[in-house]
Length: 502
Image (tube, rainbow, N blue to C red; front, side, top):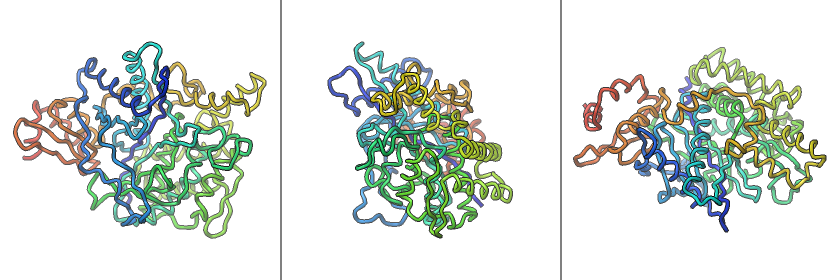
């Protein structure tokens, strides 16, 4: 029986420091986050600016295949840069040369969407906070995109809790097929291509920001030889029971429906794997070539070949996955992905695929690559120019600008699933139905006594040696139902730790 698909998103944002001779992204990222955290100290009733990240359990070199190939290069853990843990259970930090926000653990796709939108609000407020400490002629600007147009890409990663007993190879087969073909509704849209030897004339527009950068089917790396399926084995939970599928093959979406479907459909596909409801008939023969071929064809007519020699379009593969998901839901139920949310994912999945099949323009309110193309088409028509105009890439970049007054995505008529009120609440309050609730409430109430935090533990200083580590190895515990009353009743961290130990 499939386990609950607790999930989340990690977004690396593009950043530029304007008004300086040479923009340093690391310095700019640190300044951005410090400005936001310092603002919390001044304006919020509570916060966690002094709580650092606990790297004790970080192990990015562990490989789900058992051992990484000798030439594999696992990502570095950068422990010397800025890290902040927020009261909503999220992590806001500098990752290499980017500001990054990891949402808290969420119980379903809709909750992930709400906290992903809250992350956009946090970044926008961080830009404003940085503006208040910078000279008047300087500005830090952040984009929610995945490529700088100069051959560099940065990720939007997803995480899904999975049953350790499921063979990793079984996950790879289904996940690869889904990741190659889900681009038809998850692609954020990109002008031109960054594939060496391929010109903008050959690929004037493509579905995905990330597709050009994948060079392997399966692997451990995230910045070099990027694989479609990442093998990092770092569960941040009981490793005997769980694995965490770390997905790096997605775009950062601004369309709420696209984010909802990106996470929701993937959670369903992975739950189907756990229930052994998918076979190898949809396995793709050459996934790396296919991921680019699908992305490079906005007509959606390109076919890809399965290992059995069948040729299908990405849309046809997605319709097949949808049909199997509907059958799985009828037979097994949707408990693993949340019954109501799962039903909504299936409904919207079918509606978007049907719209794409009939006329992609009909889903401009739900799919980023369609929305962005419509904006550019309108601009080109108004200015009497063509897609080869030098200003078109700048217009495409502005789609991702997170400054409220400048970003074009928010003017593109994108459909809302969330409300302003729930997004605003998620800026500071954690989800109530995962362990993120315990982390967030403890940070809200006892921040000055928390030495460090990470996904699966909190370290308290209760005034006597030794420091006390509270493990959180079960992501579905530590919820409001489990510990809400306890947290309300405890007036000191020492009392909380004592009652948890008793």
